[in-house]
Image (cartoon, rainbow, N blue to C red; front, side, top):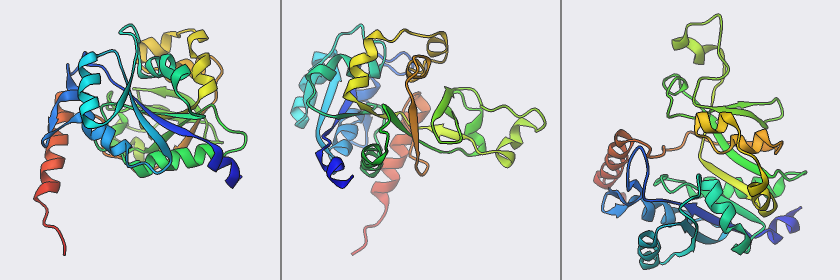
Length: 261
């Protein structure tokens, strides 16, 4: 098993676009003197498991900027509808057994989480086609539409992902649901086999995917097992202006902390 883990080659692919419907050009938003995308790429570069970090984008502007930061780019069409769609287009040109999708709006992504996912991916037998991290939600996140929830089977595989609170509780007040059940939040990071990404163009879109705006539902609808791995609650993604404000506050507060000698 250890030899199998060593032989697996992992590459991180960061899908990014300039035109975000909720927060246009957010990947270039300044967070403490660095663009958000730069922070994402640099955090990914700290991974000990991945051999390379690639940007996947349709933007020549982003390609040129990333080159100045020291990162290579795989150009993808503007027609790509999701991060997975973008990485699947790039997959034939990526030399890797495992491709790890880290979203371009995760400026605080922990490289230890990336490595934990890559290690778990290699360890599991049978190996999953897709593996993604989840974390225990607090009550305030359960009914937040911007927080994606995960419903799991007993064995840990995902049954469904939703922006709604799942499962619903008939006999408890919504503000007390966390007292009676564990709810799982989803982190927008995926480890895929290259093979499943090569199959992606043949997978049909499904109505829940389009309604929820959650690309991972296409895997489930097409019969692909999506495994999960539990992690501690992460610092969040930047989806809306208030998230960006919080990210800037986090960087500013860390900068103001005294360093120990």
